[in-house]
Length: 314
Ligand SMILES: C[S@@+](CC[C@H](N)C(=O)[O-])C[C@H]1O[C@@H](n2cnc3c(N)ncnc32)[C@H](O)[C@@H]1O
Image 1: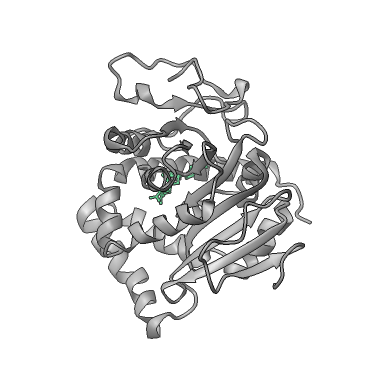
Image 2 (image 1 turned 60 degrees about the vertical axis):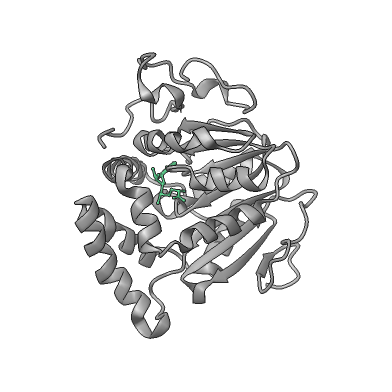
């Protein structure tokens, strides 16, 4: 059992949240380009796999947490055109940049909302599934996000996490590790002008728990069963945690997944948009103007973090 965090730890985590948001605000404009370039386009396939395992019911609602520029939200809609996606992210500029891609979105509906994964602006048991791509390692404490997502999931719903494997293990004879330590910060700096942001990326990948530790964490948070699927020699992992209840089905077409857990066989401001059950106490009525590009982003903050949004440069 984890001890409750001290007041100092809470303050450190809040500061970390703001710093991370400010950093993503600075690189938001370059984010998509660098993502696709640095992964040689593989990130598109990884997000497709993530959306594939989410398996929401037809017409259901999916939370895309740390949605950023909403590539996962779009991947979800392409596969399940009749769902609604609550695209929640802490950093407004990321959502604003992503919003530009939504014009050609197929069917369904994506609702971008600025909010914190540690205190989600969503009603209990309102989501059929939840996804997070390359976002969980930015949230401190992670456990708060695991539990919040669990609260918002319907019984049997899946929390699907796409994340880099820990860079602590040697992959491809150390080539991947060299890429993380040297290539990534350098290329990131050249394009975005922000070496610190891409060094942060490499550091957080190295600090991230391995698949077994993460599975233990998710089970401790209260999920009934956890799977993982390694991709590209373990450079990227897909983790799936299921809430107890009627299960959505086995991982369709996924082979080689490992399971852990009890049931495992092995190891706009001022009003909620239609279709997404928003928690009433979380909406922030603030000073967005009609002509403000941010207007289309719902803004949700909490009593603990009452509306001093992270810096919004970028
Ligand atoms: C690496 S980006 C991932 C974006 C997107 N999911 C993708 O696949 O490209 C990480 C995102 O996590 C968001 N984030 C960090 N802390 C957060 C928090 N506490 N709550 C919600 N989002 C958060 C950042 O704002 C950023 O947009």
